[in-house]
Structure formats: C-alpha cells, structure tokens
Length: 262
Image (cartoon, rainbow, N blue to C red; front, side):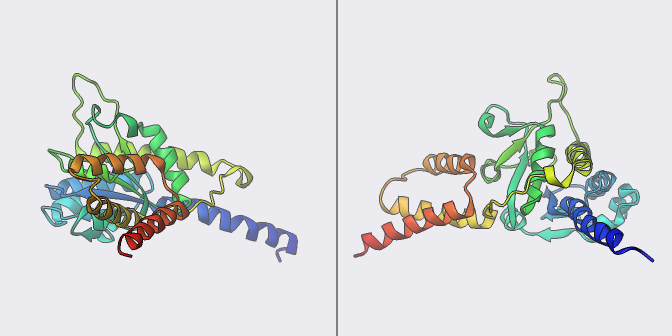
C-alpha cells in the first residue's frame, strides 16, 4: 500500500512532468511548398530524433509517398499525423510566436535570432501557446511577405564561404537547440521555471489588426504606398504586443472610424 504522504508527493509531481513533456507538442515545424517528398520524410526523422512531432505542410508539391516514408526512417507516425494547409497564413493562424528561417541577413538585422536563443525562446513561449518554426522552399526560402509576418528570423551561422544547408539539416539544427533547451528545463526545479501569465495574440489576430490598420490609414491618407505598411508591420512585430495591448489599439482604430462618420 502506498502511504498518503507518498501518494500526495507523486500526485504533485505528475502534473509538472506532464507539463514539461507537453511543451514540445506546442512547437509546430512548418514546411512551405516543399518540392520533394523525400525532404518531408527526412525532416520528420530530424524532428522525431529530437522529440518533436507536430509537422505542418503548406501546399507541398509532392504528397507523402513511399520515398518520404523510407527517408523518415521510423518517423512514419510524424508523417501520418502531419497537418495540411493551403496558405502560409492558415498554417500560422493559431500560433502566438512565429519564427521564420532566412539567410537574408542584410534586411533582417533587427529581428535576427541565433539557433541557441531560438531554442530557448521557443520553449519559453510554448508555455503560453503554439510556436511556429517555419522553413521555406528549398530553392528560394520564404518570400518577403512571409518574412514580414514572422516575429523573429532564425539564421544559422554557417561557413561564409559555403553556407549550403539542405532542408532536413536545417530542421535538425533547429530541433536540436529546442531539445537542448527542453533538457535544461527537465533539470530545473519547478519553482524556478518561468510562470509566464502574459497572453500574446495569435498570428490570425495580429493579421486582423494589420488589415484594420491599413484600411483606416489608407482612408485617412496616411498610407500611400506599400513601404509604409511594411514599416508599420516591423514596428508592431518588434513591440511584441500583448493581447490586451492589441485590443486597446483595435479599440482606438474603431473609435477613429466612428468619429469620421459622425
């Protein structure tokens, strides 16, 4: 028979362990318009090796086939539960933190993040909601429009003379850093784990705000070209708006709209 004291002790530990294990399920690995099914399988293998299993595919050029399953090398379950989306926006809609991979250092200096910090931040924010790590097309990566919708841009510090990484390698590197951060948390006492009560808006909520902002600012004549809205997007993304702050801004926009029609 288990004593009441031992039972109480075990019962108090189980939710903590479950919570820690469940954090990895909050992190979504998103592949955009992947050209070859084998790359999807190899990415799934890279994910499962590091304990991640949430794969999202946006308009893949080839469906998961025998080659994908063969190259997954035992990660067939990750492929079988993969979610499919038609657009980038649909894939990130329910995510509160969006990190896109990019090699375009010159234009993204203010939002660049290194792999180690990416792993730490992804795990911290998984404590609040879904996190997206996005990998673009094999040849051209993410578009400028897609990059604008990311809070951070992950860059791997490869050899400047030969920085070629294939898709699965990039996924492996990102997932490795996430796992290292997770293992560090496993050894952290519950009392020292950050208990973040801040609520951040989803990507979908942010997109509604940007649409609302652009509509009103065009109406009043403030926005006359696309560059202004791009700068506003970068500004608000850097601010890391909380949900209550976003609601305040949406309320301000609505109040201005109403006053203009009185």
